[in-house]
Image 1: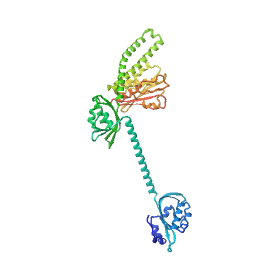
Image 2 (image 1 turned 45 degrees about the vertical axis):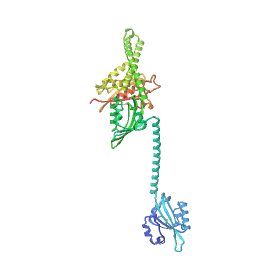
Image 3 (image 1 turned 60 degrees about the vertical axis):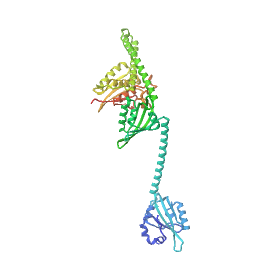
Length: 502
């Protein structure tokens, strides 16, 4: 703020035009009552008034009765002592010409005006609106504090992440697409059996078991440009061991201008869990194989017995034989599912793709199921002349599992509807029932392996949790989609899609 010297002060009345041209708000207060004797145009703009409002010639407390007492005390002190006063970034609240209150931050000075005899005659007031400066400073302070808070939160998050990684015995890794090498944390190097924490991608692939090496290499090549989360499970033969070790590798691709620059993630030794799952699958495969032969024989014997003339006239016995056949078919489906899961885990779940009519397959299956489940109504809609290229047997397994699931949860007498839709590039099939439905809390896990959804409204509703998992795997390997669609009504509405024949 520029100072105004005494020569200017003594001649201000003679130079009002000059003072009015100054951009700095200036006013002169006379006597101990602080009568406003002069104010330049900049000061009237500062006051948000024009000269038609009574201001000049009035005491400050009359023109601005809302003036804060602290300002009046400062003016009195300057008038009595002759000492100048200066303050910065002070909140001022005044009323404008229309009587509306407004608040601004100001820098201001009070300087004593002395007469020729040396006595104090008044006070020169200069002021400046610095609200924008104060706002900018406050914004900077708030931003700085937010940055500090964010850094603190990030540091805490990193610490928690490191603790979680350490507790879970996870290793971390990074892959630079530009340099073509893999960097491991200490734990990651231990899992891989490496003496150093950095190796080339080819050297790391050499440690992958030979039957998995090509698929892991292909997966890495695909995710470099994907920019998404990914997860791989594969066996390795560490340099410091003669036993296979199973690892789970998860990560995310970091991209720049559409090209992958870095892959980062975690590494976990899952040998214990994997071997337990392998042993479980081996047992399931063995048990399924051993059960399949006697069950096939039992099915044939029951069918032969149900055809005997003396049994055809006994309605109750005939009904029991039909129930026995139904239970045998149920066990057969369950065993076949176990066999398929075992093949899936062993990597032997190959697809035999053929060109066939999906609607014809639906018709065949529903004709059969109407005999084995006579207490339900089965409706077929729109399933005609739908050519797909898929594994007919496995799509039959998929359809069987979805309809069997619907039968289990649908009361007798209710309907199960199988609908087919021809859409551009794919065929969509839905299996909708009128059962008790699936709770919202359980929907996220219905396609997980060994996931069991129990419902107290349905007797014997629990199962092994492999049917829907097998359905999702069949569809995934066909490059299709499967999902449960939300429905306002009761029941479930499962959908799956398959690519059409070109």
